[in-house]
Amino acid sequence: MNENVRIITDSGCDISPEAEKEWEKYLVIMPFAVTVNGETFLDRIDILPDEFYRILKENDEIPKHSQITQIQFEDKYRELYSEGVREIIVDVINSHGSQTFSQAKIAADNLSEELSDLKIHVVDGRNYTLCYGYPVVEACKKLSEGADVESVVSYLEDWASHTEAFIIGFELRHMKKSGRISAAASFLGELMGLKPLIVLYDEVTEVLKKVRGEKAIIDAAVETISSRMIPKTPYSVITTTCPQREKELIDKMTKKVGYPPAMVEKCGVVVSCNAGPEFIGVIIRGQERG
Image 1 (tube, one colour):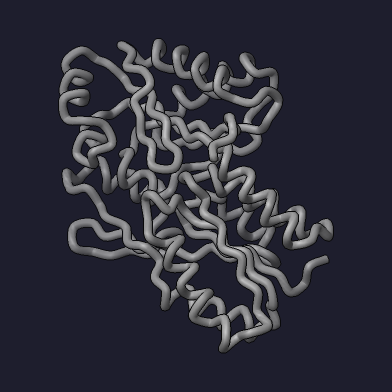
Image 2 (cartoon, rainbow, N blue to C red; image 1 turned 60 degrees about the vertical axis):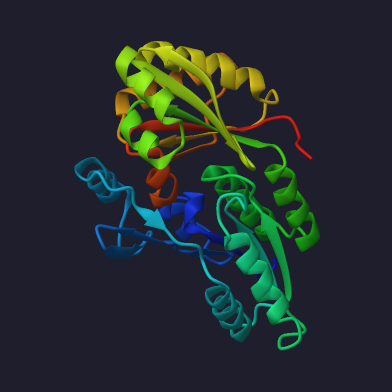
């Protein structure tokens, strides 16, 4: 057992409250703040996904979330140190989409002399949602089984270098406003009933396919996503407000690859800010990136 080790992640990980509770001995989730209509909420504390989806549907404004600051990380590091923690693994949201990773590193550097016997390992999740949420839960399991910290850090870095996140979009108005797909592509999609399949990793946000009709985009997504997966590796599904389409996607992915998703979780505030309240996300382990 690794009694004096903790893993810190951020609320963009979309780890369920149940899993957070199960692994609370090792896991610390720091919340992002989100602002909409002039009001600021702490993710997972002041606002939960279903309420946030309602706000997104009822308002034209694109909410904004802020990074977790250096000061917040320093305070958390000191708090954990005071509790007897002597080694911390930090695995946070894509550094290309947020300064949270750099803030975590700066905080670790600032405390290197003050807390000289505290080791802090900072990992760039290099993607969003369960791309780092899933391996963080697995890392907690590894720590509980006695794995050493270096091997757990290597495991998290390896996952970060392989993950791809796919978004199947059903409502384009929000994506258009957030800039996730171009205004021209959004307009064409609305005019012709086209639905996009978008892939995200590192600095990449690319529309892979635009297909007319919801059933057709799910079929196209299953074919494309399964072809990019490393065979027999776990995948995860992110849900929002599309239960029938989500079930169809999960059933078809399960049939295609021969096994169900390792995790199915509701999308939280961070990704919904940009992707809106009506999409399905699929997270896979793809080919290694440098």
